[in-house]
Amino acid sequence: TACTLTWMFYILCTHPEIQAEVQAELDEKLPKTERLGVKNLTHSNAPKLHALVYEALRLYPPVPNDEKVCMEDDELPDGTKIPKGAHINFVPYTQGRDPLLWKSPEQVDLNRWIPFKSPSPHEFPVFQAGPRICLGMDMAIYEAKICAASLLREFSFSLAPGEAEKITYSLMITMSLCNNKEQTSHELRVIPTRRAKSN
Image (cartoon, rainbow, N blue to C red; front, side, top):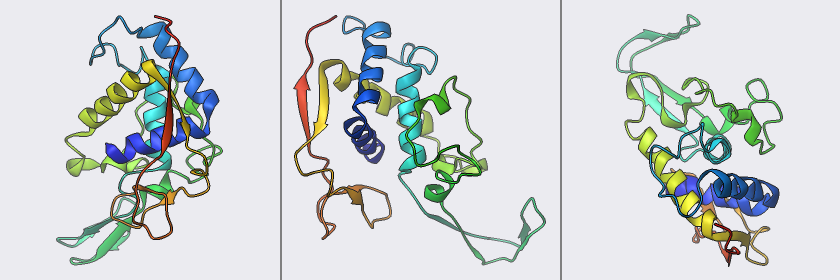
C-alpha cells in the first residue's frame, strides 16, 4: 500500500488537473464534515478516487515482476505444457502497459475505470489470480483510498523543485519510487499546501 500511495501522489503531482478532479469529487461527495469509511469510499460514491487507485496499480504495480515454480506437470489454457520444476515469470508492469489490453496505455486516464468493472485478475495480476489471489486486496485498496482522501480533503500537493527529473523506479523486489541514481532514497518529496476552507 505504501508503494501504491507513493505512485498515486506522484500521479497527482504530475497531473494537477487530475488532482483537482479528485478533490472536487471529494468536496462534493465526501465533505470534511462526513467521516470516511467503507460505506462511503465505494467505487460508485467516489469513482475518480477509486479510478486513481487502479490507475496507479496499473502503471506502477507494487510487484512488477513475479515468478512461480511449477510443482507438478501442468498445462496452460492454450495447451502449452509446463513441466514440473519449470520457473514461470509474469510481469504485471508490462501487462499494465500492453496496448493490446489498454487504450493509450502510457497515459493516465481515470475514465478507463469509470464506471468501474473489476478487471480480470489474469489480465490485471497486481494482486495475483486464482487460488493465490491476495487476501488483503480489498483492505489495501480501502487503505489507499482512506489515506488519500484524508490528505486531499485538507491539502493540495506539488513536487518539490527539481524532483520531477529524479523520479525513477527502484531496483528492489517491490517497485518503490526512487529519487536518486544510487538507489538509496525512496522518498517522494512534495510540497503540501493547505486548501481553502470550503466544507
